[in-house]
Image (cartoon, rainbow, N blue to C red; front, side, top):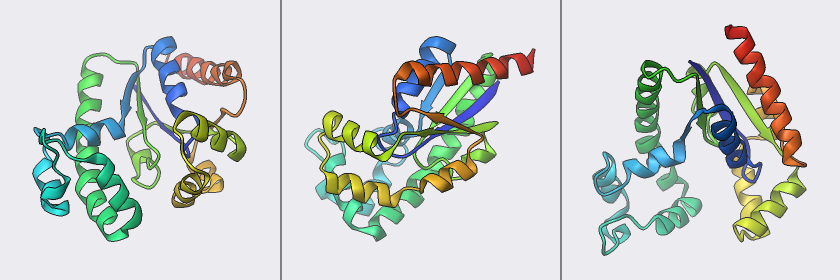
Length: 201
């Protein structure tokens, strides 16, 4: 099994790349945001600790956590954000390692892990190579405003909290330019996956 870490700044189009890897190359896709979300469900391993951290006011009537309220609080409060990260990140990594082993046993060829913080959380130690999904700043702003309704201020604040383009490039074995027509992105992906397949043969 070949493990690829896919990362990049907000609005770079990582989801498109993941969907294509799944559809075209039958890759097993693991989004770390989905893993952390499941851990915070009412039956999840971290639910009780999250309630203790933020208080009962984040629990909705259906017992699920008010994710919007949590997001707003950690966006403004660095101490709470760091505490939540310290709670979630080790648990997410343990689950990732477990799933990698499970998929290897199942005969999966391509295992893809995606998160904005793969580099900061040292997932390069778990992956065979890292891909940086790049898109120019104007394209990212346009995508986030049209698809998510983000304000320019929110986009700017989020980008400032993420790694710079230079840092992403320094840690990535492959840069996928996703600024233009997605057909060009697909060609870059296909070229690299075929190289991996050829290398394994």
